Length: 314
Image (tube, rainbow, N blue to C red; front, side, top):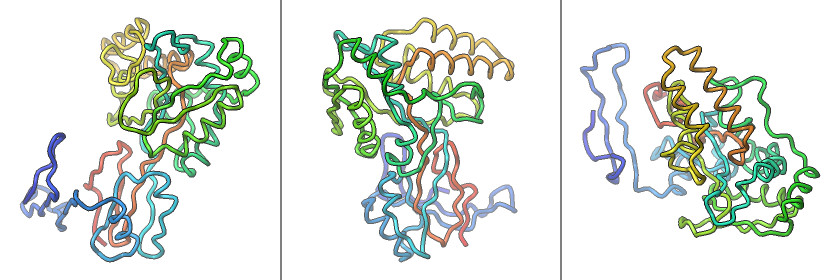
């Protein structure tokens, strides 16, 4: 039960305290621990506290790959890498004047230029998996026959040259969390004749070319409504292209389909469509990373929400 503080989308107090609800309806799951969310502690300080085992902090959420790679908790704590339903992809700015990204051949060329295994191993220190588009293999809606774009530097370079883009500098926007990924992309695109200028600021300068976007699917089984729609739908938050009537028609078809087996086939159809059209620079599914003290048994959710329903104190 909330004992002190406030935490909403717009407002968060420095500390939020939850006390056990001793009258919880299920006695077998009556909570026994007080939970304190410390929202004012600097992240670096919190990570050091977990690693030191000083008892002040037990869980730090949302570590970057670099922070997880550098973590040294010894016998006090460890990194938990949860393979959540996440997406890290590049949004092509098709709305900029004379955008080269309106060309399907160019979008496919960039997808063929990227070494996704290197993005995982070097860009995020192994904390992630390669996926064909926006759905991880084996999850609801994944098409077993759909494969990631194959690395083909020669073909990509030829397409870039044919489009008259060889030697061009492109502006790539990204959060600092993904600096390692940007370094891999920069090296890959240099091999096909493109120069990359990285911008890690929170602003969005005019004329940008590609923006790395991290997104996650918090739904049980509705990735098109939660992820694909945000990138390509008419009201999508991340859409940077003209409206796509074919995508919108598939989405409307999904909304009109009540039975789940039929729904999943439409989800696969959507995934095949955006992949075939190279509607994004498809990259990886990064792991959600936590630093966890050995004082707690922490169970992460693949929705990437910081839920504690299954977590217990040792």
